[in-house]
Structure formats: C-alpha cells, structure tokens
Image 1 (cartoon, helix red, strand yellow):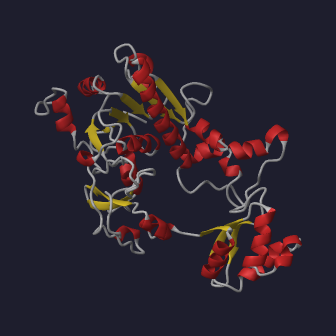
Image 2 (spheres, helix red, strand yellow):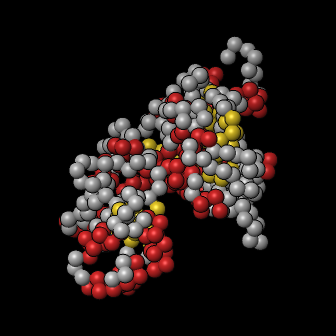
Image 3 (cartoon, one colour):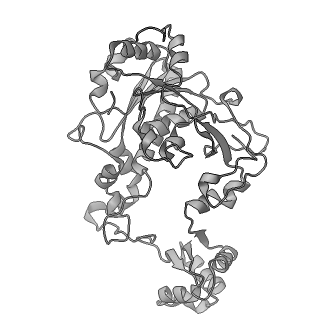
Length: 409
C-alpha cells in the first residue's frame, strides 16, 4: 500500500518507564487554541519523517488523519515495546492523531481516501517516488480537482534524478551526506545516534507546509512540496562542507572534540565522571587557566593539553562544573537518557505533560516554543491528545464522508 501541562513538578525516577505523572495536568484538543485549528491534514505516513512532521502540525491544532495499513498499521508500531508496551518511536511521533485504516489498492478504500482529500488542506506522504502517481495521489493528479490542496512528498532523494529510486533509510542518507565522515572517533564510521536525517526532513517539511499555508491565504491555491532527506542533510552539513571548500582537507572524526577549537570536548575528573567544556577564544582560555585550573601562567603554555587532564584528575565532576560556571566557561554534564529524564532545567521550566495511549498515560515533553509560564503574552496551548490504535477512528471518519461501515466493505 505504501512502502499536558504540569503546575506542580512531576517526580522522575531513574527508570524512565516509571515516570510519575501525579502532578501533571492533561491538555486536550478541546483546550487547544493553536493557530492551525480548522486545518485538516491527511497523511499516508510511516516510520519517522512524515509522522514527526505531522505530529508538529497536530501540536499547533491541526486535525491529522493518519492513513495506515489495516491490521498492522505503521510498521514503526512494532519497533520495540519500551514506551509502556508501545514502540518508543511511535509514542514520540503520533500523539493527537486519528487513525484511519485503509488499503488504498482496493477501489472502495481508494474512493474513501479521495472523498477525504476533498475536505483536506494538506496531504503528506512518504511513499516511494512514483507510488503516489500510480495511486492517483501525486500533485499533478490532484491539482485540477483539488486546487487548494497542499501536497508534501518526503523521500530519500527527491522525486527525480538518478538516485530517485534508491532505498533511503536514515543510516544510508547519513552516509551519502557525509555525516559518517565527521562522526565518531576515526576508528570506524559512526552514525549519529538518533534518526537525524528523518528529523531534518520532518522539520523542513513542517516549515514548508506552514509557509505554503501562508502562501495559499494570499493566492487561494495549493502547492507542491518536494522534500529530499539528502538535501536536508546536505544543508545541515554546511560547516564541514565549507571547511573542505575548494579541495581543502575536510574535518576528521574527533569524538566530542572540535576540528578548529581546543580545548573543546570531554575531560575526565577524579571521581570517574566527565565534564564537557568548550573554550572559544584567548580571553576565555586565560580565565580558564587562572580561575579553574588556578594556574594563570598556563595561558601561554603550549603543554596545556596534558595539564588540563592532570588538574581535573584531582577534583570531582561537580567541583569542576562549579569552577567552570564561576569562571564563565561554557560546560555541560555528560548525561545519559536517565539524566535527561531527570534534567533539573526541564523540571524547573515545567516541560513535562501527560499523553494517553492505548496502554495508559505516558510522559511527554511539551513542544519547543510552548511555555506554560505566565509572562503577560497570549499563550498558544498545544494539543496533547491520545496516541491512537490502528483504525480507531474508521467509523467516525467514514461516517463524516457518508460511508457506512456496516456493509460488506
């Protein structure tokens, strides 16, 4: 078919699966005042890129109808069971959506989809290039009968060109875009630990759809958006590309270090932990030498690399961080995932909400930019509605379209 805001602070345990939601207040679509209320998005989506794009549209109040395979749905549903029995990827990218299970190869299901598109503002799809045209779902096939419809195609390499039909998983696109050449320690190629190519393409699809909605408000007509994962990643590789401009040697994998700045990266402390720091200029280096290492003469000492390690070996990570903060030196904790669940800054800014799932409530971060604090400005309340089961909304959606669900079909 196709390749809740918290006024009191929730408690977060060391085990992220046992996140306590006792202090969270639920938000629902009825409480949302998002700017996309009244916009309907139909998405033939799977895995990460398209679902993450449409989830953000739903956060802003759009109605998102997720078209899935009958029975099994989006195959990201079965990636794992870490999200309270649900797949971690799926929980992350699919709240606030309605699930419509259709097999668009069947005439009756295809007809239902076409009726739905007549009421839609946006169609998002990460079908294989050419598949949308074969199904009558390409922009060219729809533009005459649906002149206001915005069609966003997300694919690995775009809708044309010699790479159009290549398989394009996140790792493969990272490799094509040169990401693996600058990531890791140099012993062997290393990918980024998250689906960064999917996320990049989701973000560009999201921003382009918002721009297309603005453009339609001026012209009255829809448009076609062609998002290539490779092009999104190539844009994000701007620094290393220009670093290697005109045949110059490119940056090499250096772990957490920097190609052109030092000291910048990971330094171990005497308690077996580590501190991440970054010094950007000579003024900061002089301040670091005198106030953190207590050795002001190091500001002009070429041996400073070993001296930093020796100095940090005699103090704890907490003490090193305190000294760096007092000296105004950029630094960071080296957190694992449990450290992020427990992050004091996220708790202090009340970033945690509650989302319902078929298996019960789970914790969810508020979308960036949405702030529960009161500063006198008008606040947009994000949608934080449940994650659906496969086909959970078939009856209600088809009833809107005048299609009975009680016959043979």
